[in-house]
Image 1 (cartoon, rainbow, N blue to C red):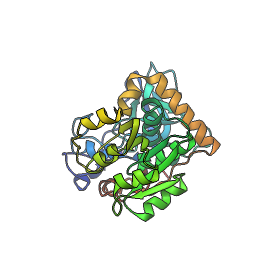
Image 2: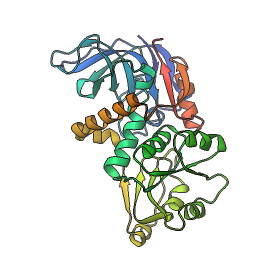
Image 3: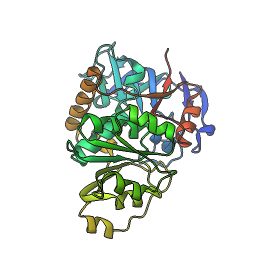
Length: 326
């Protein structure tokens, strides 16, 4: 089968387009003919051997796919050959076929396009778990989203609005902030031009924000933490900036706030029933038109390294998708 292959750890330009043997599903796995694969920040990390999960070389990146079931293992009960599905494969998705554990495979609602399905789980799954399960976001609360025009950030903006919060989007350009407004942000901060802490204070009339959603890290973390309200919740989602910040621990003490880790991949494995309920809710909102993925770039399988570079350089607005089967 055709695939994008990581033969040695490194940046996207080290990936190769070539042939890999067709995967063979184990008794508990499903073999999927891949139509589309989402492009995510963990894909950039996994090819550099910097992610929590570390596959053996060689492998294909790509952790989120949509396609059709073409073979099932003897123990599989939840799907059948011919079903249209989305799946969390972790890696292997930048290829024509992928074998996935059946408990990580979900039937697609009728009529949901593959490119939308393949760009939903990582971003919306992460953001909904963060806001619902980790922050307990309530209607009327102030939600600050850093990196708000990226994949998970834009999903958090849209979900925050859907959940009744007042969303403040923070990003590095007016183009990005305009997209955030389209997705429901009421207020914006351009942290390339504005002082983040001072702007938070002004927009909240000195109260601070109830919840911060931070997939960026780096220099913005401490400034945003200083803008948290009493008993606020600070969500640590990732470090797209490339720098893991060191937090002065007197700040959560003084603010009575919580710093909460968000590791959606582990949550979906350890608490599958809750994860499935979240996914079902997301699919319902998609069908109702309450949330809709913004596709920032469509790429062929050969162009997958370009998609990863767009994320690495923080040029991707919304979500990228690799189209494997037109």
